[in-house]
Length: 60
Image (cartoon, rainbow, N blue to C red; front, side, top):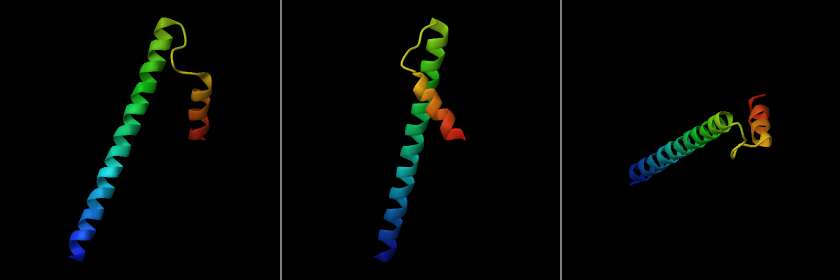
């Protein structure tokens, strides 16, 4: 019984981690697409300077 509960919790945490990773990947991909579109079109799209600065600060 205890084993089953433990296994279920492990599975849940793994799927949660996978979901977060997928969400992060999608967000990064969308950000790159926005950046590319804004540079190609010569006008800012959804990407704002504040968002880029925030990413810059997160790297430090």
